[in-house]
Length: 70
Image (tube, rainbow, N blue to C red):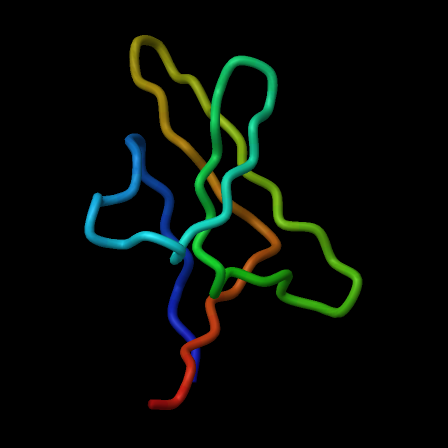
């Protein structure tokens, strides 16, 4: 089973300790769910910022989310 990866601004919720990995990059911190993996073996997950006029959107590519069976 898989879900579509999503990206949003802000820190993870306080009630989710240990669920995210922290990646400091330049002056920002990226928090990625431990369930986010490259969409193909040896692939790279890319997170970027697109700008159009005054709007900014965070983008993600090359990723998939795996859901563990309970």
